[in-house]
Length: 535
Ligand code: ADP
Image (cartoon, rainbow, N blue to C red; front, side, top):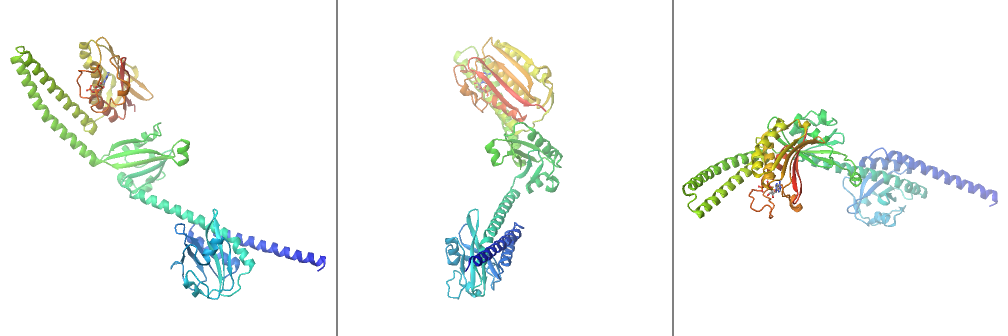
């Protein structure tokens, strides 16, 4: 061959190679554009197989996927076969047969001369009488996800060129299938979550950060008596739901303290009581960034039966306390009669009568406090109405003044001019203030000062009782508002009490949506505060 002929040959080979490449590119393009049209796995399998068979010009083919759990190779789509191996699944155990070889070698396996003597992992495959087969691994995300095969009933069907095209399109198909599979897995997970959400016994509503409703489950629909369609996509402020629930939710969502969960009870017009909990939702990235919440999740629980039981219990306690109080009254009367009959004659008898009288008084106080606590915590009869706060505070001051005077304390009030009025249960607020004021007398020393102070700050009302009495040790301060907690040191020695007074104040504050606080230094005095949100 001379140089010219050699060059011509080289040129021809080159142009053939170019043509082959162009054909391959075209094949990949055809397959890619076909398989990327759907995210439905079964549809993608079908269309991918059809497109592949067209570009390689083969009559039969199959696509198998690897079962992520068992690593079995499962035939998921077939074309041009005699028997249906998809609905009667062809499952080839990991490593078995020609599929096993494809995966092991991570390479194309071609046999252009099948003669029926081969060992097949699935024996009935022999009934298809294929004479040629080419199988290639499909890759996605760096691993083999399945096998793409083409077959023919004639021997010597698959040239190197066809195999090259098969190899070239395999990964495109693999990626499309993997995407469809991931999408399906995600949809399935979403469906499962949705099913859990819908069948939850709690009502669940989610909103975006601005309060636009995104999701409402069946239970919430029933509880609020509103259809999902009328709520979803609607801003909470316009949502057609019971006004009491909507208004409380708006207040909860508007609050500046976002990170905090909020819970409150709403009594509907039909007497049902709903416990509503509002919590911010964070996506993972936001948790790590400690940024703003992504939205809100609102959980509704029907607690009517619990409320009814609480009210029943409060009624029972009241009746029981009443029954206990009567004999105590009789006992006190008898003791005082005894005192007047034999008083002053015998010092020991006087002392015994004194001890008995004090004990009965203690018992009566305890019953009263327990009853109060039970009462306020059950919410039974708790009613808020507009009250002139200055007037309430002045009445409390007038009530405590005689005790202050008899203990020789300097008592004053410091009520800010703009104190105005507030929606409170007047009777319970008075009880709470009196508990603080009584303590300021009890835990104090003659000649010291006590101030009843009231002011507003950041939209909150602060009612404080400030004394420069005995003060409270730091380690005791966090437990002061617990039931039955009393400080036990030499300054409080001999001062009697039930340990329930501050627990009652705390419950009163909470019933108003507020809270209590204390600032104190042992030996320097204390400030007991009651914070009530305004508006
Ligand atoms: P009680 O007065 O019946 O013991 P409280 O719940 O009212 O119950 O108060 C709990 C404890 O808090 C008291 O036992 C007392 O030790 C402490 N305490 C309350 N008020 C004051 C105060 N103003 N100064 C010092 N200690 C106080």
